[in-house]
Length: 125
Image 1 (cartoon, rainbow, N blue to C red):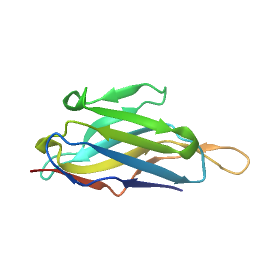
Image 2 (image 1 turned 180 degrees about the horizontal axis):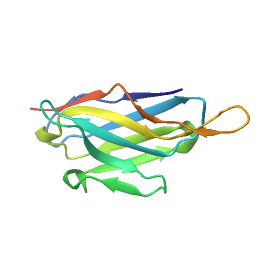
Image 3 (image 1 turned 90 degrees about the vertical axis):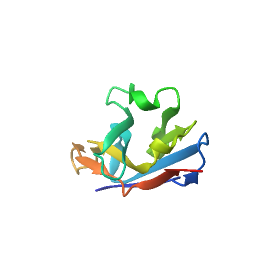
């Protein structure tokens, strides 16, 4: 019903910047909460930054002041601008969409929780 496609991951030197994009497609009326998570080898997946259903933003403490989440509602796309990257930011970054409103025939219906396939970010000299 909903597909999320991430892009923008790359190899970058410490102190560098990257911009990740996540485009949602499907029978979407309106996106709801969306965000970015990451998972490093041997570690659990963790929240990086997200928009809540009310439109406010949440950031993990370890990215505050360095990363910025933004969205383009007309394109059903969420972005993550990452500055001052550190080696410990190395991970697979996943896009998440939480209960978007979907076309459902006579009535629109809430969808489920969706994940993208992930995009690799490697910070290394």
